[in-house]
Amino acid sequence: MQQARIAMYDIEERSARYVECLARHGAEVTLFKYVDTSREAESIASSFDGLLLPGGVDIEPALYGMPLKSCCGETDDLRDGVELLLASAFIAAKKPVLGICRGCQMLNVAMGGTLVQDIAVELGSGTLKHNDAEHKMGGTHDIEISGDSLLCSLVKAERLFVNSVHHQSAARVAPGLTVSATSADGVIEAVESATDFILGVQWHPELLAAADPQEDSLFAAFTEECERVRSAVDAA
Ligand code: MN
Image (tube, rainbow, N blue to C red; front, side):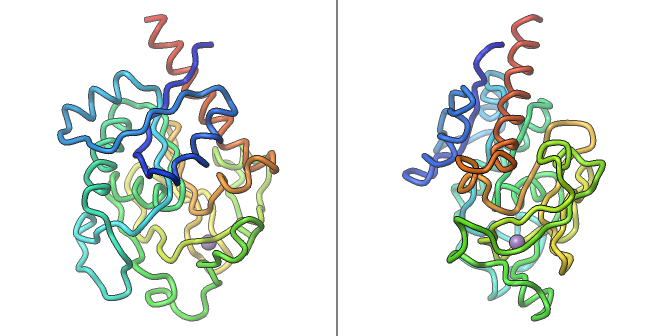
Protein backbone atom coordinates (compact mmCIF):
# COMPACT_ATOMS: atom_id res chain seq x y z
CA MET A 1 0.00 0.00 0.00
CA GLN A 2 1.15 3.53 -0.76
CA GLN A 3 1.44 6.03 2.07
CA ALA A 4 -1.74 8.08 2.47
CA ARG A 5 -1.38 11.82 1.86
CA ILE A 6 -3.92 13.76 3.85
CA ALA A 7 -4.73 17.47 3.68
CA MET A 8 -5.90 19.52 6.66
CA TYR A 9 -6.48 23.18 7.44
CA ASP A 10 -3.60 24.56 9.52
CA ILE A 11 -4.84 25.21 13.05
CA GLU A 12 -1.29 25.96 14.16
CA GLU A 13 -0.26 24.46 17.50
CA ARG A 14 -3.59 22.64 17.78
CA SER A 15 -2.88 20.73 14.56
CA ALA A 16 -0.45 18.35 16.26
CA ARG A 17 -2.95 16.16 18.03
CA TYR A 18 -4.79 15.38 14.78
CA VAL A 19 -1.57 14.91 12.83
CA GLU A 20 -0.29 12.43 15.43
CA CYS A 21 -3.47 10.33 15.20
CA LEU A 22 -3.00 9.98 11.44
CA ALA A 23 0.80 9.63 11.51
CA ARG A 24 0.43 6.72 13.94
CA HIS A 25 -1.21 4.86 11.03
CA GLY A 26 1.48 5.88 8.55
CA ALA A 27 -0.24 8.86 6.90
CA GLU A 28 1.58 12.00 5.87
CA VAL A 29 -0.39 15.16 6.72
CA THR A 30 0.05 18.48 4.91
CA LEU A 31 -1.37 21.62 6.52
CA PHE A 32 -2.97 24.34 4.39
CA LYS A 33 -3.65 27.89 5.59
CA TYR A 34 -4.49 29.68 2.35
CA VAL A 35 -6.60 28.30 -0.48
CA ASP A 36 -8.14 31.08 -2.54
CA THR A 37 -9.99 29.49 -5.42
CA SER A 38 -12.00 26.36 -6.20
CA ARG A 39 -9.42 25.60 -8.90
CA GLU A 40 -6.68 25.52 -6.26
CA ALA A 41 -8.83 23.33 -4.00
CA GLU A 42 -9.52 20.95 -6.91
CA SER A 43 -5.80 20.66 -7.57
CA ILE A 44 -5.19 19.77 -3.89
CA ALA A 45 -8.04 17.25 -3.97
CA SER A 46 -6.57 15.60 -7.03
CA SER A 47 -3.05 15.24 -5.58
CA PHE A 48 -4.06 14.30 -2.01
CA ASP A 49 -5.97 11.20 -0.89
CA GLY A 50 -8.18 12.53 1.88
CA LEU A 51 -9.22 15.56 3.92
CA LEU A 52 -9.38 15.92 7.68
CA LEU A 53 -11.61 18.72 8.97
CA PRO A 54 -10.59 19.41 12.59
CA GLY A 55 -12.33 21.08 15.53
CA GLY A 56 -12.54 24.82 16.10
CA VAL A 57 -14.79 27.87 16.30
CA ASP A 58 -18.33 28.26 14.93
CA ILE A 59 -19.24 28.53 11.24
CA GLU A 60 -20.72 31.79 9.91
CA PRO A 61 -24.52 31.16 9.71
CA ALA A 62 -24.81 33.09 6.40
CA LEU A 63 -22.98 30.13 4.85
CA TYR A 64 -26.00 27.94 5.59
CA GLY A 65 -28.53 30.65 4.84
CA MET A 66 -29.47 31.62 8.39
CA PRO A 67 -29.31 34.97 10.20
CA LEU A 68 -26.62 35.26 12.86
CA LYS A 69 -28.06 34.82 16.35
CA SER A 70 -26.52 36.23 19.51
CA CYS A 71 -26.03 32.65 20.80
CA CYS A 72 -23.62 31.88 17.95
CA GLY A 73 -19.99 31.99 19.07
CA GLU A 74 -16.85 33.35 17.48
CA THR A 75 -16.42 32.64 13.77
CA ASP A 76 -13.42 32.74 11.39
CA ASP A 77 -14.13 33.92 7.83
CA LEU A 78 -10.73 32.91 6.46
CA ARG A 79 -10.99 29.39 7.83
CA ASP A 80 -14.64 29.03 6.73
CA GLY A 81 -13.67 29.96 3.18
CA VAL A 82 -10.68 27.63 2.95
CA GLU A 83 -12.42 24.64 4.51
CA LEU A 84 -15.55 25.08 2.36
CA LEU A 85 -13.41 25.09 -0.79
CA LEU A 86 -11.45 22.02 0.35
CA ALA A 87 -14.51 20.10 1.56
CA SER A 88 -16.40 20.73 -1.68
CA ALA A 89 -13.41 19.71 -3.79
CA PHE A 90 -12.68 16.46 -1.90
CA ILE A 91 -16.37 15.49 -1.82
CA ALA A 92 -16.68 16.13 -5.57
CA ALA A 93 -13.51 14.07 -6.17
CA LYS A 94 -15.03 11.22 -4.11
CA LYS A 95 -12.04 11.21 -1.77
CA PRO A 96 -12.40 10.30 1.93
CA VAL A 97 -13.28 13.08 4.37
CA LEU A 98 -13.23 12.81 8.17
CA GLY A 99 -14.79 15.71 10.07
CA ILE A 100 -14.36 16.18 13.81
CA CYS A 101 -16.56 18.52 15.89
CA ARG A 102 -16.55 21.75 13.84
CA GLY A 103 -15.44 19.47 10.98
CA CYS A 104 -18.66 17.46 11.30
CA GLN A 105 -20.61 20.72 11.12
CA MET A 106 -18.49 21.91 8.17
CA LEU A 107 -19.26 18.70 6.26
CA ASN A 108 -22.96 19.24 6.81
CA VAL A 109 -22.76 22.89 5.70
CA ALA A 110 -20.58 22.10 2.67
CA MET A 111 -23.15 19.54 1.51
CA GLY A 112 -26.13 21.88 2.03
CA GLY A 113 -27.29 21.32 5.61
CA THR A 114 -27.84 23.76 8.48
CA LEU A 115 -26.64 24.02 12.08
CA VAL A 116 -28.08 24.56 15.53
CA GLN A 117 -26.41 27.84 16.61
CA ASP A 118 -26.57 26.90 20.30
CA ILE A 119 -27.93 23.60 21.57
CA ALA A 120 -29.24 24.86 24.93
CA VAL A 121 -30.82 28.00 23.40
CA GLU A 122 -32.40 26.41 20.32
CA LEU A 123 -33.18 22.88 21.53
CA GLY A 124 -34.03 23.73 25.12
CA SER A 125 -32.78 23.32 28.64
CA GLY A 126 -33.78 19.63 28.63
CA THR A 127 -30.74 18.84 26.52
CA LEU A 128 -27.68 17.14 27.96
CA LYS A 129 -24.53 19.04 28.83
CA HIS A 130 -22.63 19.02 25.54
CA ASN A 131 -20.05 21.69 26.28
CA ASP A 132 -18.03 19.88 28.93
CA ALA A 133 -14.36 20.76 28.51
CA GLU A 134 -13.65 19.51 32.03
CA HIS A 135 -14.20 15.89 30.94
CA LYS A 136 -12.77 16.12 27.42
CA MET A 137 -10.06 13.56 28.21
CA GLY A 138 -12.69 11.11 29.50
CA GLY A 139 -16.34 11.31 28.54
CA THR A 140 -19.61 13.12 29.12
CA HIS A 141 -22.52 11.28 27.51
CA ASP A 142 -23.49 8.16 25.60
CA ILE A 143 -24.36 8.12 21.94
CA GLU A 144 -26.54 5.59 20.13
CA ILE A 145 -25.11 4.43 16.82
CA SER A 146 -27.17 3.06 13.90
CA GLY A 147 -26.44 -0.64 13.51
CA ASP A 148 -26.11 -0.43 9.73
CA SER A 149 -23.77 2.57 9.66
CA LEU A 150 -20.13 2.94 8.65
CA LEU A 151 -19.49 4.32 12.14
CA CYS A 152 -20.90 1.16 13.74
CA SER A 153 -18.71 -1.00 11.51
CA LEU A 154 -15.64 0.93 12.74
CA VAL A 155 -16.24 1.10 16.51
CA LYS A 156 -18.12 -2.24 16.49
CA ALA A 157 -20.70 -0.98 19.00
CA GLU A 158 -24.16 0.56 18.98
CA ARG A 159 -23.46 2.59 22.11
CA LEU A 160 -20.37 4.61 22.92
CA PHE A 161 -19.48 6.92 25.82
CA VAL A 162 -17.95 10.03 24.24
CA ASN A 163 -16.50 13.35 25.27
CA SER A 164 -18.44 16.46 24.34
CA VAL A 165 -16.95 19.91 23.79
CA HIS A 166 -19.47 21.56 21.45
CA HIS A 167 -22.39 23.94 21.69
CA GLN A 168 -23.53 23.57 18.08
CA SER A 169 -24.62 20.54 16.04
CA ALA A 170 -26.19 19.64 12.70
CA ALA A 171 -29.81 20.82 12.37
CA ARG A 172 -31.21 20.00 8.91
CA VAL A 173 -29.01 17.20 7.62
CA ALA A 174 -27.58 17.75 4.15
CA PRO A 175 -28.83 15.73 1.20
CA GLY A 176 -26.25 13.01 0.73
CA LEU A 177 -25.67 12.59 4.48
CA THR A 178 -27.53 10.50 7.03
CA VAL A 179 -27.45 10.60 10.81
CA SER A 180 -25.40 7.70 12.15
CA ALA A 181 -25.42 8.62 15.87
CA THR A 182 -27.47 10.70 18.30
CA SER A 183 -27.37 11.37 22.03
CA ALA A 184 -30.45 10.63 24.18
CA ASP A 185 -31.68 14.24 23.81
CA GLY A 186 -31.78 13.89 20.02
CA VAL A 187 -28.65 15.92 19.29
CA ILE A 188 -26.94 14.69 16.11
CA GLU A 189 -23.56 13.23 17.10
CA ALA A 190 -22.43 11.75 13.77
CA VAL A 191 -23.31 11.98 10.08
CA GLU A 192 -22.07 9.97 7.13
CA SER A 193 -22.54 9.33 3.43
CA ALA A 194 -24.20 6.12 2.30
CA THR A 195 -21.95 5.88 -0.75
CA ASP A 196 -18.52 7.37 0.04
CA PHE A 197 -16.16 7.48 3.04
CA ILE A 198 -17.50 10.79 4.34
CA LEU A 199 -17.85 10.70 8.12
CA GLY A 200 -18.42 13.47 10.64
CA VAL A 201 -18.33 12.95 14.40
CA GLN A 202 -19.35 15.61 16.88
CA TRP A 203 -17.05 14.45 19.66
CA HIS A 204 -13.23 14.50 19.85
CA PRO A 205 -11.70 11.08 19.11
CA GLU A 206 -8.26 12.72 18.67
CA LEU A 207 -8.10 13.29 22.44
CA LEU A 208 -8.86 9.64 23.23
CA ALA A 209 -7.44 7.60 20.35
CA ALA A 210 -3.96 6.95 21.78
CA ALA A 211 -5.47 4.96 24.65
CA ASP A 212 -8.76 3.79 23.17
CA PRO A 213 -8.89 1.36 20.21
CA GLN A 214 -12.54 2.18 19.43
CA GLU A 215 -11.70 5.88 19.04
CA ASP A 216 -8.51 5.01 17.16
CA SER A 217 -10.50 2.88 14.71
CA LEU A 218 -11.79 6.09 13.08
CA PHE A 219 -8.25 7.25 12.22
CA ALA A 220 -7.16 3.74 11.23
CA ALA A 221 -10.07 3.27 8.83
CA PHE A 222 -9.80 6.78 7.40
CA THR A 223 -6.07 6.32 6.71
CA GLU A 224 -6.66 2.87 5.23
CA GLU A 225 -9.33 4.25 2.91
CA CYS A 226 -6.93 7.04 1.84
CA GLU A 227 -4.22 4.43 1.11
CA ARG A 228 -6.73 2.47 -0.96
CA VAL A 229 -7.54 5.63 -2.93
CA ARG A 230 -3.82 6.32 -3.45
CA SER A 231 -3.18 2.78 -4.69
CA ALA A 232 -6.14 2.98 -7.08
CA VAL A 233 -4.88 6.33 -8.46
CA ASP A 234 -1.35 4.98 -8.88
CA ALA A 235 -2.64 1.85 -10.62
CA ALA A 236 -4.73 3.86 -13.10
MN1 MN B 1 -22.24 15.90 22.55
